[in-house]
Image 1 (cartoon, helix red, strand yellow):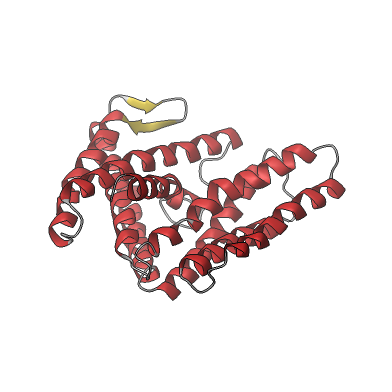
Image 2 (cartoon, rainbow, N blue to C red):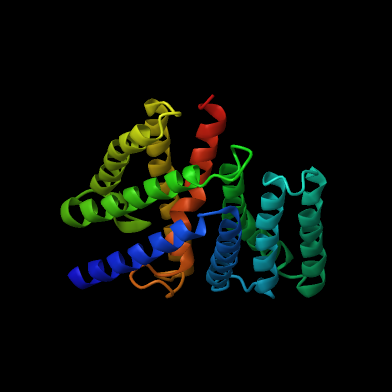
Length: 271
C-alpha cells in the first residue's frame, strides 16, 4: 500500500505540473486539452468496445477534438459566428449515414454509444473553453480553481478513506470509496476555499466556498460514474498510461462532472 501511495504521489506531482503548464496561456491550453480530449475518447471507446464494437473509433476521437476546437474558436473570439458549430452537426449526420451502411443489425446501439462518448467526454472538456474565456480574454485562474479543488478533494478523500474509511459510499460501484473520504474531501475543499478568497478578493469568500463544495460533490460523482462504466465493461482501469492512476480517463473522470458544477455556479449564482 505504501509503495502504491508513493507511485501515486509522484505521478500526481508530474500530472499537476503538466496541467499548470498546459493552462499557462491560451495556446498551451488549446494544445494540451485537444490532446486530452482525443486520449480520453480513445480510452472510452476502447472500454465500450468490450461490450459493443465501435468501428473506426479514431474518427470519433477526432470529432471530439473538432468540438473542442470549435468551442475554442468561438469563445476566444477568433470566430464569433455561431454557425461554426454546424460543422460538428455535419459529423452528427455523417455518423448516422455511416452506421446505416456499416451494420444494420446493431445500428441503434452503435449510434447510442458513439454519441454517449461525445456527450460524456468531449462536451464537458469542450466547455472548459467557456470557463477559460469567461472574462472575454483568456484567464487561467478559474481553470486553476477547478483543478485545484478537484485535486484537493480526490487526494484528501483517498487519504481519509484509506486510513479512516469504514462506511462505503456506493459498495456496488466503488467499494474503496467511503463516506468518511467523501466528507473529508468536502471539508478540506471548504477550508482551502479561504486561501483563494484571500488572494482573489474580487470574488466574495462565500462564492469561493460555494464553488469549492460544488466542485467536490460533482467531482466525486463524476468519478463514480466512470467507475460504474468500468465495472459494466469488466475492467479495473481505463488504461495503463499513468502509474498508480490508470489511464487518462481515470485521471480526468472527476473533471467531466466538475466542469458543469463550476459553470452552473458561475452562470446561476455569481452575479
